Length: 84
Image 1 (tube, rainbow, N blue to C red):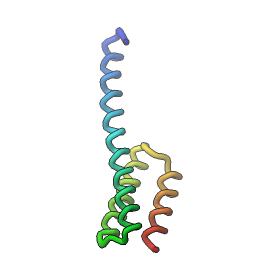
Image 2: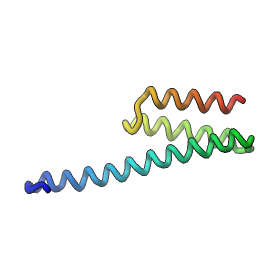
Image 3: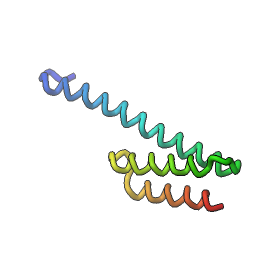
Image 4: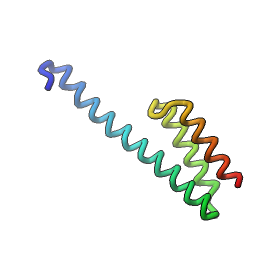
C-alpha cells in the first residue's frame, strides 16, 4: 500500500475508473449479444439493437476501452449479420 497521500488518492481513483470501465465493457458485450440473438431469431427490433450496439462500440473506442481495429472489425461483422 502506498504511504504518500497523493498515491493513496490515486489508488482510489484508479479503482473507481476500473469499475466504470468494466461496467461499460460489460454493457458493450451485452448490447452486441442482444443484437446477435435478435439477428439469428429474425426479431422485429433488430435495427434498433444494431444501432445501440454500434453506438456502444463507438463510445468504447472513443474512451480507449477497446482498440479502433476491434471496433471496426466488430461493426463490420454486425453489419453483415444485419444485411442477412
